[in-house]
Image (cartoon, rainbow, N blue to C red):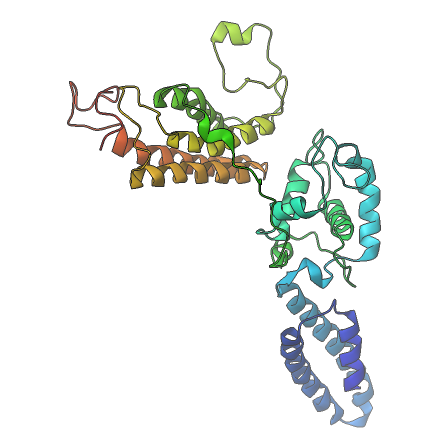
Length: 363
């Protein structure tokens, strides 16, 4: 009886690790002890009690083993999806994704979903990140349309197309479980350009204040506006509204892009424009050189870039509260730099006037 119970549960498991097996077998032996105690009951009740005990033991042990298995960290090389699930995913993919990403996932209007470059984009993140990207932002013309189960099926198909092996169990549409699945340590690295970038040869076109007000200020405000306006709310700009009321953050581009797309773009603008703070030769509005080699300036620049990346990641959740929370991180990144290099009480005509520009870009 013991070996049959163990074997039945083992066959139901999707390839557990040795450690998981060892832990679970200890639980099995404890439960089998209960079964032995039933064996010494009087004959008239033994048979009925034994049947209940056997069934209860099998169900309990299998549940324990499957739970332990789900909690074990895995990589996509360990068969985390089932072949029949990938077939379902292929059907959904062809209907919802192929137009942009290609019939063979080779990429068309959208990027490829297979190959080294694709893997490198997600290699340092758990599988839950790719799941969330698909679930929250795809398909592009109707994001959020896919159910969690459909998303898991598509993800299974992507893994199959990427030559990652199938297993016995289906990939679960559960974020906690997906966070336990990672890419292999030797996942593909992005290809680097063989020739140096000519970007460093471009001299600055404007001073630091112009960069701040032209890029960082408007895009930060787009993200701050999420605190009071849900990007998912569909808006139609009344004719002449922008002209009558001036530039409006809440309606900018709303007739062309979705609200969440605009938040994405703003977050990317913050992250990508942060290095412009380090352009050699750039000057502040007062003519002083930007302290591009100052350790604190370098630290604050990296903090801004990190805040932009965090905002983009938050925006990908398509959750207003999540982005509202991250807007505080952006505000703090700006404040830390401004306190040292911009807003300096005790200098100039009015020590508390933030418009005191004469001492900016100095400590």
